[in-house]
Image (tube, rainbow, N blue to C red; front, top):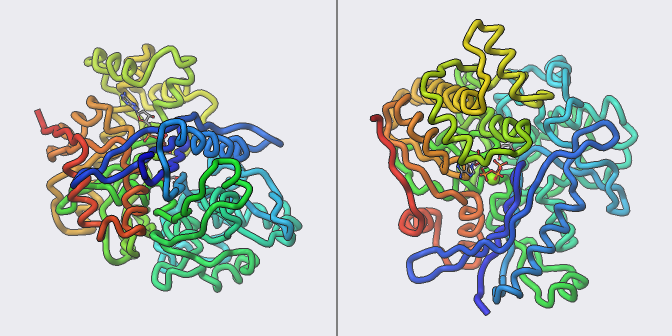
Length: 467
Ligand SMILES: Nc1ncnc2c1ncn2[C@@H]1O[C@H](COP(=O)(O)OP(=O)(O)OP(=O)(O)O)[C@@H](O)[C@H]1O
Ligand SMILES: C[C@H](O)[C@H](O)[C@@H](O)C(=O)CO
Ligand SMILES: [Mg+2]
């Protein structure tokens, strides 16, 4: 049986269990199990099928023994901001409502009437996304206050899966920062903010950093799987784990490219200056209390929705090929407009935008895809200009990580648009960051620098330069 550490990486569009182990000075991966993730509609809200996702995690763990793998540890990471609320009997009080749901429409503005935008940013350093946890909780307080009164435990999505595995409750630090309720300097729940919002402080759990050993499996799960393992906390915010695995450290801007494009740099301190606020950058928590100074760009969500609108007739690779053939099409959209957050039909929304802005309207799949990719490249350039303005320096390299780094047309567009060296890879950056964090906890790796050097020599990194 091969000893390994198991990463459970669940993104907004897909989940995977990936086993990792050291072989000499290389990190070896084995994909154990992959499954789809998607929004479901329930009780008139967009939700995550949290029960099915946990069953997928268990099904993936069962696959390990069949593949001759003996995991000695497991770590779970998912998308940010979303959570569940448990009552005194540890039962779910609501669905796991998704951040794209409309329940937070208008909530941010109502919160600003209680706490100014400037103060929120100065204390938390977190970007203003209408779906941040703070606004989700405020919407519950307004519409169903009795739910918050019954709530004994607030657990973010990975925290909840960890609870189901171990019976232990904790809020992991990197993901907790995405709530916009953690103080950027104390790294604790900001009790003053919670008091001012009238949200009960007692439901929040102790914040624990990545590289914490949370516990081991519940007895009934040991019996089910036939083995026990340590449940460790990686950076449970998927982007937090992805950034751990960015091989290039100096003078590099990363783009964690998946459902969202998270573009930024790694810092040892939070940047909460007015310009960062004006440009809506965030200071999410990272491994070893580093900071992820980044911003959300709408990302490949748009092409995911285009693919769905075409009834999945085309693969992502085929859409890229068709876009490459649409060389004469140049219309672009503002990808970061709220209208693209959850439109009824992404293709029609893009066409409406082009009509409203008196641009050529995309009609073929290739033209629609090219419009998405060209528009993303423009948004990346804008964010890079803002980062360089704030840092008062020029960054030489861009490291694209995650599934989106397989989009070679977009990688080339980024190189052509920014005139910077683009490094593409690793694809499974999030799972890799999750695994190396576990290996550090187990003492098999010393620190993040050693991990990054090993990652750089373990995975293919492609280079793109301005043609
Ligand atoms: N062969 C491919 N060619 C081009 N693009 C691809 C290819 N495979 C995947 N992609 C892109 O990668 C994206 C998925 O990236 P990734 O798997 O990192 O997302 P995820 O982990 O499911 O979601 P999240 O971003 O929430 O973590 C797809 O939306 C698609 O645009
Ligand atoms: C909702 C968040 O902005 C989102 O999860 C983003 O942080 C991310 O990590 C996408 O993978
Ligand atoms: Mg992902």
